[in-house]
Length: 245
Image (cartoon, rainbow, N blue to C red; front, side, top):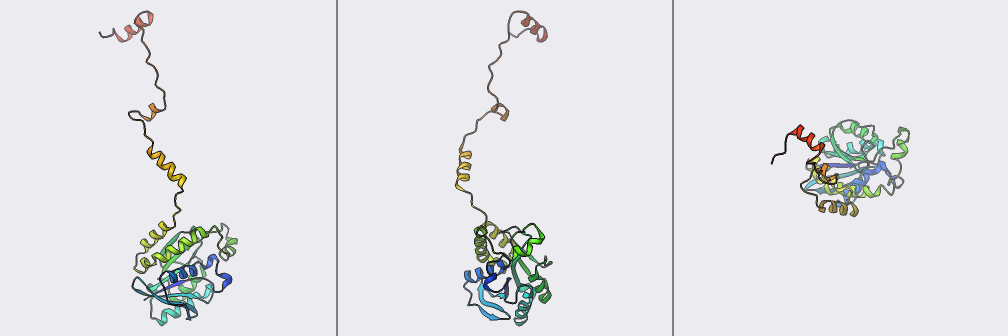
């Protein structure tokens, strides 16, 4: 059995915030894999289901972010799970928006939810870090993470959440690299038609043959006729010898 945890803060006032992207990812997985209904247990919302044949408990702690470990730890003790059975999805300031990285173990990076889980469960679990970007100034971090995603963000956020849900089975099977690759490909912006037509025209345009790139930039010059008589001809004959017949 695996325990997949999405991190966030409970309540409708927090639902659209960047800090709640872990909840959003858990909801996308819940929809995509037809989990059972959410129920209250372990100070959390939990739902049971299967992903790729593996039994999974999906959990969204309702203890607020900085106490997330209480709910996760309670669920792990009840089901006798180990840290290797835990997968946590959460927001990451140090990743560009739409980027996703998976790692096992390591530090919290200042994330209060991860700090709490480390304290209650140990740190040898897999972390799915979902990039939200950085505001550029440390003093603006709190307002930024507790701010809602913008309309422009929705252009990459919704495809990203769907890609996470579509490919979460790879993580369940231990293929973390495959998961990251699939998600990355899913959120790449498509080439626009103007770029495609320009590229096709450039590829179709014939290139001149038999000339170097230097010759292609210079016009052909007419041949210079060497004089056969007169002082110039005499000087050339003296330098180079008589012209072969």
